[in-house]
Image (cartoon, rainbow, N blue to C red; front, side):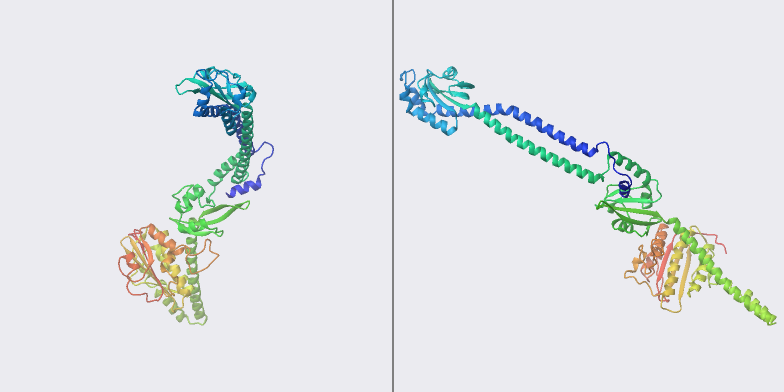
Length: 575
C-alpha cells in the first residue's frame, strides 16, 4: 500500500489514449441505450396490435352483453322475419326501447356505436336517426349465421374495430344481431399515450443508468487510486519483485484488519501459519507483534518469535485522506543479539582484566616501595604471600567446583564486573559442574541474563551488603541454576509478567527495541531445550522446575530465579 502512494507521486497519469474507466463508462451507456432502444422498439411494435385486440375483446364483451339482454331479444323478435313487423320505419324506431338502450350502452362504455339489427340486416338501433330502418353498411352474414364476427371495417361512422354477435330467440333461432364498434382513432390516441409514457420511462431508465455508470467509474477510480490497468500490472510486478527480494519482512493490513500482503521474509521471521485474505488475528502472530500490527509503532520494538529475536515497527498509510491500513516491517535481530552477548562477554572479561591490572599495579607499587626503602626482606615476604597463598588465583570462593571452561570463565568475569559495581558475587555451597557444555551459547545466554538482572537488582537495591549468589548443579546431563540477590524483589504487580516481552522496571531508550527481553529470552531458550525458567518461590514455582523445593526463603532478601536446562552437559570437563 505504501508503494501505491510512491507510484502515484512519482508517475503522473498518462494522457493521450482514452482511459479505461472512460471507455467502460461509454460502453455501459451505449449498452444501456441499445438495450432500451431494442426493448422500446419491441414494445411499440406490438402495442398497436395489442390495443386493437384489447378493444376488439371489449367490443365483443359489450355486444354479448346487449345480445343476451332479454328485453333486447324480445324487441328484436318483434321485427324478425317470422311473425314480426316486416318493414320497421325510422320514425317508429327513433324513440323505441332498442334505440334508447343502445345509446345508453354506448355512452356508458365509450363505444363508437352500438347497432342492433334484425335477421334481415335492417338497423333497429343506430347512433344516427337517419340510418334507422336501413340495411347495415357492412356484411352481417356471419353473425346472422349464428357465429360471432370480430374485425376491423369501415362503415357510415368511419373505421372501427367492431364485433357482431347474433341475437337468439327462445327457440334458438337467430333473430338479429348486435354490432359494437370502437373507433380506430381512439386506438391511435391510446397508442400515442403509451408511446409517450414508455418513452418517458426509457429516458428515466437511461438517466439512471448513466448516473450509475458515472458513480461506478468514480468508485473504480477510488479503488484503483487513479491508476490505469497497465500501471496496476506494472505496480504488481514491481511489488512482487521488491517485496520478495528485500531482506526485511513486510506485512500489509488494510483498514478492515485483513492481511493483504505477506512477503517470504515476513513469513519466515514471524513463523506465520495464516495467509493473505485472513484477519490479522488469525495468521499466527505473537501477542507482542499483533499489538504492533494493530496500532502504529514507529520506534522498532523487540519481540521473540520462536528461536528468533526480531524488531517490528509499523506505520499507517494514507492516500488522498483515505486510511489504507498499516504496514508492518520486520527485521531479524537474532544475529545482533548473538553479537551483543559476545560483546557483553568480552566486556566482562575486559572489566575483569582491568580490575586485575589495578590489583597487580598496587602490588607492584608495594614491592617497589619496600625495595626503595631498603627493606628487601619485607618485599620478599610480601611476594611470597602473594604468590604462595593462592588467594588471588581464585577470586570467587568455590569457583574451582565449576570445571566447565565456559561457565568458569564467565563466572570469573562476572565476579570482577560485579565488584566494579559494588556487588559481591558468590557461589552456592552445592555448586558442582563436572562436565562440558553441549550448547554453550544458549546456556551462557540463560545464566548471563539471570546473573545480570540479579547484579542490577542488588546494585540498585536498598540492602547491604549487596550480594548475588549463584548456584550451579550438574544432574546427569542436566544443569540446574539458582540465582538469588539482595535487591528489593520483583516490583511488578504480577511477578509472572517479568517473563513477558517488554516488561521491565527500567527505561533505556538507547537499547534498540527497548528493554524487557532478557528474562523472556532466557525462558524461551530454556524451553527450547525442554526446560524452563521460573521465579523460585519456595515450594511452588521451584517445584515445577526441579521437582523439589529449594528450601527456605531467600536469606539475601531479594528475588530467586530458578532454571532447569536439560541435556546440555556431557562428561569430560577440563579442570
